[in-house]
Image 1 (cartoon, helix red, strand yellow):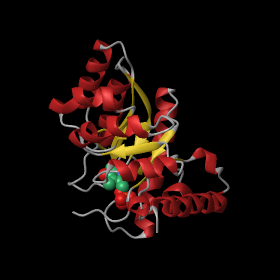
Image 2 (cartoon, protein in one colour):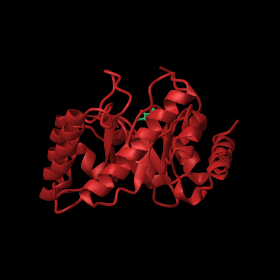
Image 3 (tube, helix red, strand yellow):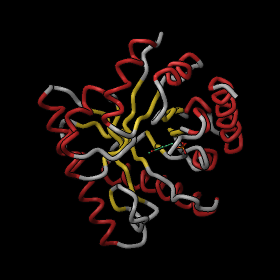
Length: 241
Ligand SMILES: *Cc1c(COP(=O)(O)O)cnc(C)c1O
């Protein structure tokens, strides 16, 4: 299977998931996660119609993004989807168009300050840890609907982030628990969806993007309201390690 064939299959599956729940496939942004893949693979995906790519490491982005930008016919949008260490934040800015993985107030403040120093606003998503796995980054949101203290803490954190002048918060992102069954996945995605509804009303802001769903679970994520899916293996094949 070529990368172009894989993309066709993923696009067909996205369309089928949309049909099941009466959504328009045009609402879904397919982000091809190209971590550990070569510049040639990325250029092949771009030639097959992909114009959003995700990377999870700043260094890898530094090695690949400019090379890809110089080789593709139409401009592509770069998404940072991995944890950004504070000391690497300044390298994120010139490379990435959207940082999906803003997982702490501290990182948000840092990115905002860097953007403001350049008279820019950086588009971001807030990564929310819905599943509660200790291994996952993200603002703590695993019990926001059931625990008032947690809900209040999350509300305050997000309030502070929304006030940062260098950032434009476009929505929320989450990572599903590894190896979870469909019912658990559905619940995690639905909780992110309802958190978005709640925040939209509490803060009277628009949070149009919900980034959820990867190779193993993007069809369920779309059924539960995802507007962005982040897909690596189904497009580029398995990664080495
Ligand atoms: C690797 C990665 C993906 C893509 O995962 P696949 O299972 O290969 O589709 C999506 N999101 C994030 C944050 C990732 O690190």
